Length: 401
Image (cartoon, rainbow, N blue to C red; front, top):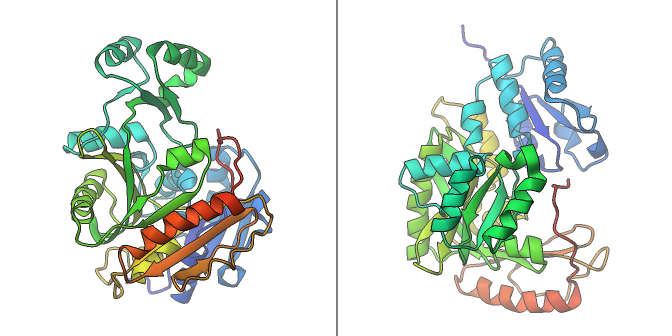
């Protein structure tokens, strides 16, 4: 006889995010257990939506997490285990396989965490990627350096955003870096640096089908902002344009190739200045950061966290339906700020949809029915932000919560 009780969710995150996912689960009557870091004990969690919360000490070993959750499973039947952040995907996949809970296993997880794995799968399915080589066999690397003109970028295979990426201008620069990495060098890949415009596609996926996608373009490439400082901006691409339709098609084929059955995805592409082609950069099975969810919701009415929860609850029973979608436009502007609580009240255009409240950050989400209005506003706002707020800190080598 089918089990009619609500599904119990174990949500894992070592970063403060995913509140709307947990609220939506609770709205559907699902018990929600949060597993997070001890340092986030006082974070702004939706405590009214949580049935229990457990805190992990820093640097706990994965085997100890498995042991702790297995002990929890003696008294709580865990139906879904969800990693709300990219860095928790391996933990969640390991737990699913150990407890035989439905969802993404370790093999598929690698296509959304390991930049080498996702590039090899994309290339196998005829999706363009920048020329790359695994940092494993030194003869292969020498051949690559001789035949692929620089500059190149040395990328950690399992970091997010631009963390840990180093630009290499000459072959002589590479070998000392590899020597420093020692036994860790195989956790990197070497890739041709392609100057170009960077785009992202944020998707909702149900039963391996992209049922919703929103195409956006970054102002400055994220790597430039992360490593050189500056103002982060992104905005909706004109709907029906060649960029919009082309990236939707590539993204749909890529998601199917990588094997995402259900959930959300944040995928990045670069349109190379040299040839005008789109090249795949990376894909994460998560909601994009930097207030991209709020931007997508402003433009379309679709909250990615909420839809992800609804898809997980529906499972494969065919009951999931995407809500009505608007086709408007939105953008985000965000920067580190010199002020602890910067005042953005002077930015009072009617397109201001949301004022971002975060210590030492200045930010806005904009909304308009006009495809051209948002990029124009962002360009002007970015100049003002640089004068009024901008602070710059050294590039991060490791993520921070």
